[in-house]
Image (cartoon, rainbow, N blue to C red; front, top):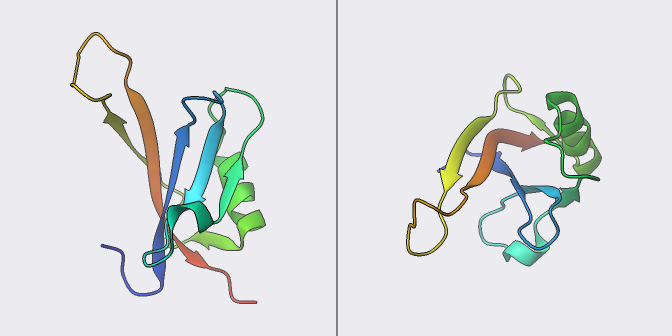
Length: 96
């Protein structure tokens, strides 16, 4: 769970689009309404690109721009299947 006033930002590659998608998960709001940014191309966005995307969404890192990476497996946990990589970082909304 995030600290009060902070939210988890996550980034993953879309299985159907092949493009990286960064979104801010806001509890109590349906995922279809979360702020999101879709990057062009399939290359992993740089830390600077991710920072600019968060800025465009009105968020900033809570501390340092560190991203934690994890693997997610397809249903059935077949080790022969490719894994999905998910990056996450804690962010806060920028005061307007």
